[in-house]
Amino acid sequence: MSVPISFKDTIQIRGRADVLFRNAMDPKRRAKWDPNVQSAQYVGEERLVNGATVRFRLPRRLLGLRFTARYGGVQAPHRASWETVSPFGPLERLSQAWVFKAIPGGTEVTLSVNASVRYRFVATVVERLLRSSSAGTLIELQRQVDAQGAAVVEELGREMARKQREAQRALRPTLLGRLRRPK
Image (cartoon, rainbow, N blue to C red):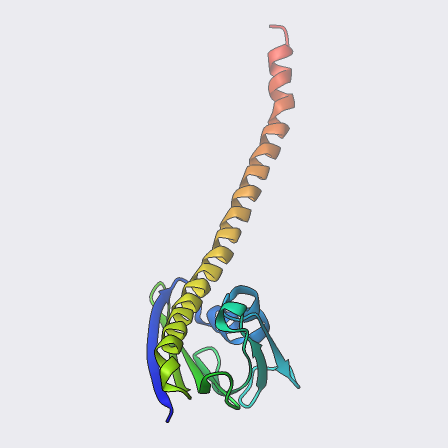
């Protein structure tokens, strides 16, 4: 008898919905920033559309499991979901649904997880792992967006400092010329 697990996590992130959608739903991008996904790659055509199939590999702390998922309900940049194609490990079924809702000052991101655990004796452990990985994924998504914004601000700061140094260098000969002239 399988044990159902279902929960939702919501977070507000200072970022545009389309950027968050691409980072969360594109398998190649997600594997770069999400510590809960070791690798992810498309099977066949590399496009995020309804029916696209993706192979995921989880990190060792999540038992290093591998599974294949199929995307459905893709409505970029507002929502998308995927569901496993076949059972893997202790899970009979696993699905994630993402909703990106634009709000003033950012985007409200909701991650819904639904799973069926094959064995009752591991259900609580699997649920704890799923809940912690879901929360960790949302926090890392926020960090990813904040890191991009911080990098832009840092680059702008460097550019301003460079322009100020160049302006000071341009003024230096004229100032030195004024100081050296006899009166």
